[in-house]
Length: 415
Image (cartoon, rainbow, N blue to C red):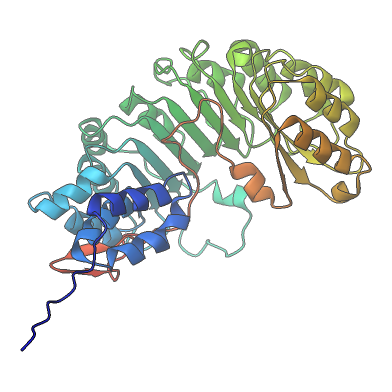
């Protein structure tokens, strides 16, 4: 009797599979990678650990419930929990004092201390309205007048004992003026700073000038911060700042101070939608720019004629009135240009020089991106001196939590 042996199906080496997963999830679009990582974590036990490690690269905490689930997941007394805690690189925290079971300050600080490799932190602070005065649909300006408590000494002590944060994003949607100064005093390691919401005031009891030498700064305030505050913030950054992102129109005094202080050393500058043409003279002082982006489709021709010779990346808004002939001449004359990104406004596609622009870019080998999505235009990762730890506003994440030999998604970190 003839016996048959079972045929062994060749298996792809696990190291190669994991390399494929990591390569597929490379980049800053973390939310887009979540479905893939969730699917990979269900394939088998060996894939599960690798996928969860990537999933726990960033976590959002909104409430005490999410904090408890997170602490259970990264229990450092277990090998798996220890691995997940070590994997944490970015954390988003929402401190909303107007919500039931909101995340406590002490819990937030304790979660940070449990992640030794944490390098990027995104904090959103919301104040609490008086009982019976919270109205749905009330303008944002009114919401900014809500009070919120500052961090107490125990919270500050815990945060100082934790990891060194290199990238901090703080959005203050309350009238609290002290929290920002407290956070900046905790981490002398900050290199990339993004602040927005309530414009900080340089008060009499402000601490000593900010001691960090920033490499990147993003501002998004309802009202432009004062020159006094910017002088306090950039005390040691005049020689180190390379990227500046202004998401709202700055007042002329603040913008002039920024340009005079850090302009000659800037490599990347992003401006809001409709910067007044008077600012073009100041932008011309940024002589070493390699990247410039603005949504304004109505800038004067002189604005583009004064751009630095080493400019590599240019983004602009396009309407029927945009001086495209100057930009086409720029494309033909500048060997340094590598990418151009166009935000189409109404009538932009009908511009008579739109097709010649595309032809000129193709002939010169310049990567031309055209979009109608303003959010996509704004969200492009900086190509010059980028912060690999920089944080964007992201939707809630729902990483898997391993339990025994199975994976389950029922424990939402963002509950």
